[in-house]
Amino acid sequence: MRPSLVQRWRFWPGALAVRLKILLIRLRDVRTFFQFPRQIEFDARKGSRVILYGIPYADWNATLSDRALWSNLPGIAQVLRRPASPFGSPFGSGARADDVVIAMMTAHIARKPGGRALEPTAHALVTLENKAKFAAYMTANGFADYCPRPYANRHEAVFPCMLKRTNLSASLGVAIVRSPEHLDELLRTRTFAGHAYILQALVPGNVEHATYCVCKNGRVLWSCSFASDIGAPIAIKREDNALARQAIATPDSALRQIEAVLQPLAFSGPCNIDYKRTTDGRLQIFEINPRLGGTLMLPSQSKQLRAALACIIEHAT
Image 1 (cartoon, rainbow, N blue to C red):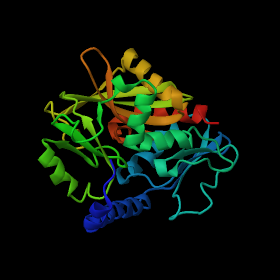
Image 2 (cartoon, rainbow, N blue to C red; image 1 turned 45 degrees about the horizontal axis):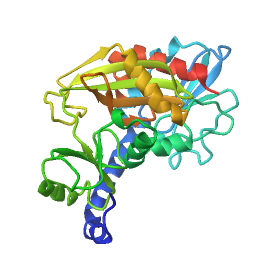
Image 3 (spheres, one colour; image 1 turned 180 degrees about the vertical axis):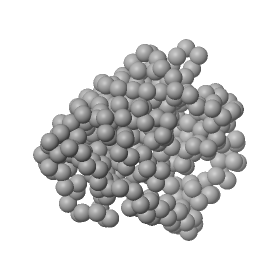
């Protein structure tokens, strides 16, 4: 659903405030990036270079610049962390023919001249990055049962329901709507005013799952999963509100459903899928982020991150 011109004009100061907040976060990311090593050297006779392209989230830097993370991966001579434009070279990653390029954020995903990568197509990126396009994709490909029901408008919506900005990820721009009046109130806030949004059915349940994958042409090559207790059946999972999070074995049925959803996109590269499961085992997918995920950057998950990186390096072309 797109806001009217009047709504855009009335609430542009709030939209600018949100933009400023995002800019300040990115400036913090930039400052933190340069506080950690940007080059890790190994035996030059050992193999090729890995280029981590783009400035990641601030809390990823310590993990990705840790020599111990990379020391046991075979065939690596050097790890380079290179910022993307506008803070780095305007000519891309500067990769050589045998270098493996791993983009840090979706904005950095583009084929770099001379390098190898395992990354999604532009079409896959556009589909997964926009919540409205993703919902339409799921319906068009027969996967409507694998995601929350979308509502065409407020008159069709069953409250409580979910309000989501189409162009944000994780828990940003997501709210639980209690009533039509509450919806009007939320749409006047800085977060939603003047922005496209969707309404979806609320999926109750205390436990939310996240599966991290490395894929090639829609096939899952590697995965790991986590289950988080968010403390209430009607709540939004955020980084700071999980009562407990534990690693779990990814059920075969979940992997089959994830592959089914990714295959029409011929998806390649890392991704993380957030979802709940129904009593009959069906996934209710909230979003698929086509990049590495934050949980893998935790010190406790270094083994899983190393396995994901090894898989990307092995299958990069």
